[in-house]
Length: 346
Image (cartoon, rainbow, N blue to C red; front, side):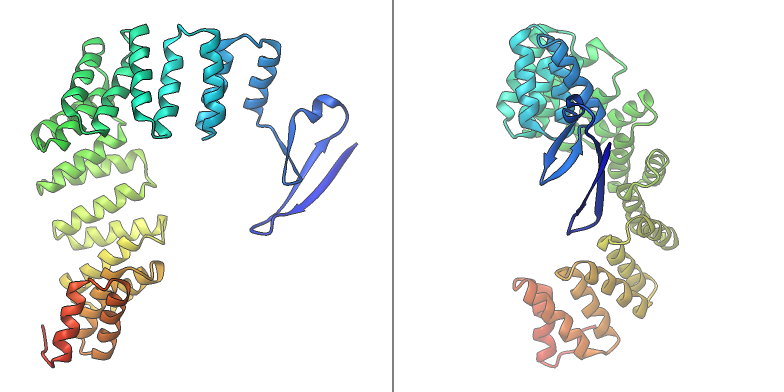
């Protein structure tokens, strides 16, 4: 017999769960949360069942720990990886999971210790080496980070992530030439390395190098819905004063994410400064403000636009809004002071 249990979730929707009550084993597949019966996910249920049959299997605890980690249940993940290591402390990969748990819970020193233990157990473990490199990069110890990267590359000279990590170190060290070279090597090893293309775009765009456009386009080919890549491409075109391409990129971004205030703001800037289309600029600034009512820069930009259109009352309202949100917003304070003094500023 099947029973339908309706339950209304006030915030959003009506959910109906169908549960079977034919035997006690079916009851083990569900748990009660706020009086709603929720099915245990199939993957987790399979691991649970296997552990019931093999309670001393360390690898099963490790797999379940990874499952919990992937689902952001870090307490359960820690409990399971600890059980795995209690059963068998010689498995290097268990320490990788342990280090990940420590890292995401902001216990970086313990994460480092776990990774060092992993390498002690397996001195060819490039994953642990690169995680340590990332950890040292995170705390700005670039020399140590690069040392672990080079250790990994001695074992695997084609490791794309190693070259990417080296590029990130050089970027932080302000060595742009080496950063670009390392990122280029990363994409040579892995032509679908999205993050490397993004970084190449950023590095080249900072040099006003037109290659940035192609790198961003390569990133978009890999992730066509990436708001990050579309925004970066639009900004790159904007900085190159390629207005139509910038507008097209921002408009594509807004089709993906209509609530992107920065795209609206930049469209406002282009319409105001480059195209002298003041009404269109005001519309874009207004859209940005509607998304974020505390967007001081958008109020200020709209105020300047109103002022240039000789809509002084509207301009004052925008500058006042700026100072209400941020009393230390000096450009708006200066505009109000000069307008109050009857000085017209162009």
